[in-house]
Image 1 (cartoon, helix red, strand yellow):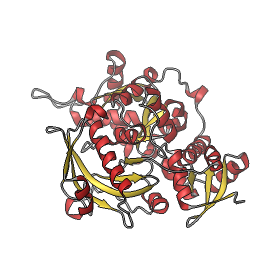
Image 2 (tube, rainbow, N blue to C red):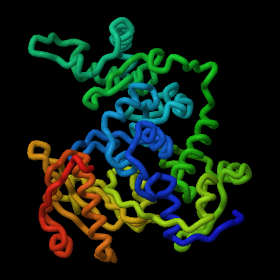
Image 3 (cartoon, rainbow, N blue to C red):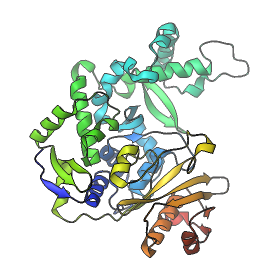
Image 4 (cartoon, one colour):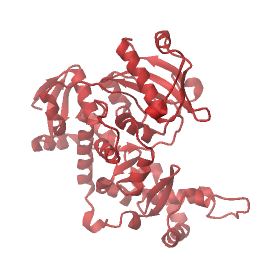
Length: 408
């Protein structure tokens, strides 16, 4: 493996956070191009519709960019800077990486539940009619075909029509042209991606997998080999020849990390070793943030034992429905269960837990409150309410405080 550097565990964490754009707070107010660059740095921005606080993709961007208009994400999609497809799960992906996922669209039966070949065969005429309808009349949403009071049974009913659209999306015949109120708007691929020609632009699956693995390595910054496939949900990947080739190309170098052993460092992160690397950023993280979406990786790298419990019956939850990790200066030091009560413009923190060995220093207490306040302001909250938290935090913060959203 020819190890080139020996690193501390905190150095490894900082290198990963630097690759993810989470090492230091943004230096300026966010610009539209920063959002595009942010998604490119991560390679993937996972989509989730849970709206207890902010929907996950918006929160992931806020954790990196600070205050920005949420409409920018829809703008980036509508302008074609990003596209949607199945990657880690459903994700926003840089347009330049369309070629990496095209082979999945051409063999959608390999996607499991995301594509139903039997359904497509049984409803062939209806699906042909739907494609012709879109060709003649323009983009559609699933909601455009919801059944009404006077609706007669048939293929225009909600359930079959929604399934038609989703299967056509998985097969790459339809793409998401934009989102309206976060609802997908579907159009023909030929209109969303008019320049694409399979015979000219496609790459084979082997090359696509190598490029996805290389993207994963770059976006992780530092990694164990076993961490790579999960980023794009790759299965049965021949990692050893890939790593050997990438090392020979100079794309990755071997390092040793205290407590973790032999790891790999992407070449883009190598220059960061030339000077001391310190973490100064504090932020709330989405459960679907790339830093924490691989639960085994975040346990190994950050010693943070994390599970998302929104799909767990309430009686079996250890923490809460939508628990947000708190990243503080290179470490994950707390988690909180929050909800945004929009009618009263309140961010309500139902409970808050500190990780073992978290020291309640004045700077930590201040940074934590500021992170919560910044997030609340971005969500246009006027007040933060803490229902449960460690006594030391409550005595320092009080159980509620006002938010100045204009100062976010």
